[in-house]
Each structure stands twice: as C-alpha cells, then as structure tokens.
Amino acid sequence: MPVRRVVCEAMPDLPHTTWSNALVVGQEVVLSGQTAHPATRDAAQAGQPLGAYEQALVVLRKVQALLEAAGGGIHNIVKLVVYVTDIADKDEVGRARRDFFAQAPESAYPASTLVAVSALVFPELRVEIDAFARLDVDLRTVN
Image (cartoon, rainbow, N blue to C red; front, side):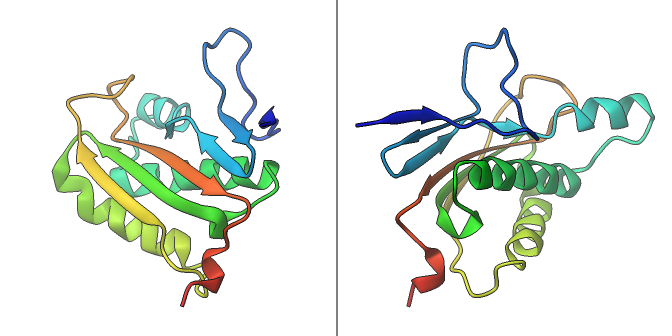
C-alpha cells in the first residue's frame, strides 16, 4: 500500500522532529495530534493567553490545512480525538467544533472522543486534536 507524507506550506514538518504532521496511507489520512502552538506561546507572551475555544479553532484550522494539502477537506474527517487539560473546557471546545463545522453545514459531524489529560507538551496548551480522514469517504453524503 502506498504511503505519502503530506507536504503543507502552512504546516511544514520541522526538520529535526521525530514525527510527520500527516501521512496518506492508501485512502486514509492520519494526522499527528495538533495543538495551537506557537500561537498559544505568542499570545501568552503578549499577556493575552488563548482560551480553549480559540485554541480549538486554531487546531481545527490546522487540521483543515493538512487535509486540503492531502487532497481532501473537512468533509473527509471520520474521527476526531480531542484532548483537554481541563474537562470544564468541554463546552467551549464543543462550541468551537460547531462553529468550525458550520462552514460545511451539509456534512455530518465526524465520530469523536473527548478526554481530559493531566498535561500537554507546553503549559499554556489546553487542547490537542488527533484527526483521521478517508479520501474515499464524504460525510456530505451521509443520510
């Protein structure tokens, strides 16, 4: 089965990392967990930390950019796994998901899991999202 690394100008793989942002395996697109870094660091340094809603939107836009670079779009997302550092943020993350997916109102929502974790890689991060998509699946056709 062919495997292709996704090359995305908006989300370049950093030269010394030990992971790929996204891979296409056959028709499946597998994304590494995405966070709002470095936007969260920049906002925190400016004294205006990003809340869970803003972080979730930043992350979902990164997911969209990677999927588009892979030849798909948000209508191909079949599963999301959302990690939050505070379960109280679940409503704000849910609002961000609704607002983000409103751009594709004819599409069904992907399957999803939300879990609370003790920490993410940087202390200002509150949300991380894993995404799984299939280029041969279109959630706009779900009945």
